Structures are given as structure tokens and as C-alpha cells.
Image (tube, rainbow, N blue to C red; front, side, top):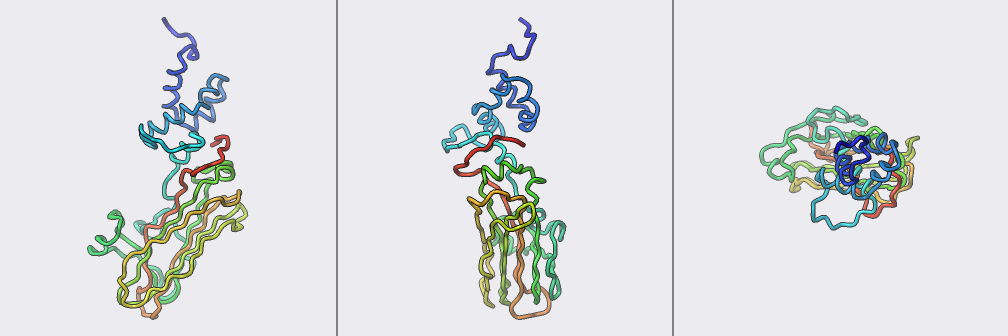
Length: 263
């Protein structure tokens, strides 16, 4: 028997159809068609199915999720928000705020260094000189897909990571500052650990520094990331700290107060 109206289909079939529709189209268009579609699109079942279909969860997932709709969007948006973190594109996307000494330089990881670095996909790094070198990026959260209500109500964890190393033959000082900024670029949260001084003849191992912003105030619209350093012996050339594989990610919140999902 032919179906004259799509709404005559069983709800289970409509739900299956909706799992194949892009999430933003579901909310911006499909949800407005009628009350039946609205109610189906608001079902936990739909968003859990979409998470499963996208590989965001497994069949045996047993962790609590406060709002599957929000969880889906956070998982789909999850990526490194810093561009060119490993110097593959030179200094593209980076602002060279302070470019002292012989200035910033990009170098390739040697074979031995690649073995030592925990990520075998990283092949290059940025290196500083004998006067301070600092570079930065500003992440525009709205441009990256994180709408205002999502950030203000859910306030998902913001995770920052950076990797740095000294040379074995020269001491150096590494520094990092990350700020959460309002629409007017006023700071709403800051992570600025004490500069890390590494002595001459160190092991030159790569070190990770990380921080998670949680329960920050509403109004975060940008994230400012700045790092760099200087060698402590003032040798001509590039003997300061090396940095690479920096990242800013926004992960699904642990226990969010779920807002209405608006893209």
C-alpha cells in the first residue's frame, strides 16, 4: 500500500531516516516542519543513534551523558583548533609577536628525535633564538562552529597542550600563556605557568605541558595561545627551546547543564 504522506510511516522508520540527515539541517529545517518531526528530533534515541553511526560511541557505551544532542555536536566539532601546530606550513597562521635574536626558525626533527617524540606524525618544530621569541594564535570559537549558547550554558572543558624541548648543549627558558577572551577580548580565564628553565647539558627530552579550563564564566568567544622562549647563554643561532604539536581542543563536558541545541 502506497504512503501518501511521509508522516504515515512508522516512527521507527522516520527516526532511521533522520539519522542520515545532517545534524544542523535537522535543527534548522526539519524540526520546524511539524510537531511530530520536532518531537522525534528531540528524542534521546535519535541523537544516541547518530553518535553510534558516526563512531562517537560504541555499542557497549556505558558512560552517563546528560544531553545526547549536545554530546553529538561536541564530538562532531572535536579537533585541534590551532592551525599549523607542527610547522608543516612554516609560520602560516601564527603571529610572530616577539622575534628577537636570529628570529624564529623551523627545523626538521632528526631521525633520533622522531624516535623520542611520542607522536610519529610530527616531523618539524619551531625553534627560538638568543633573544626572546614569542608567537601566538587567536581562536575564534564562533568561526570554528561553537555557538554562543553552547559555550555559555554547557561550558565544555577546554584542553590546552604544548610540547617543548631544550638542546643538550645550551640552557633555555620556555614560556606559555593561554587566555579565554570575551567578545571585547577581555580575559575571562588565564593559564600561565612559571617559565620552565632547562639547564645546559640537560637530557633534551620533549616535555608536555597541559591544562584544562573548567567551570569558566560565560562569555568566552576567543582563545589566545602564546608560547616561545629564549636560550640562556645568548649564543648566536637557534639554541633556545623548541616547540611543536600544540593543541586546543574542546571536549564533551563531564556533567553539563544542557542548553537547547541551537547551531
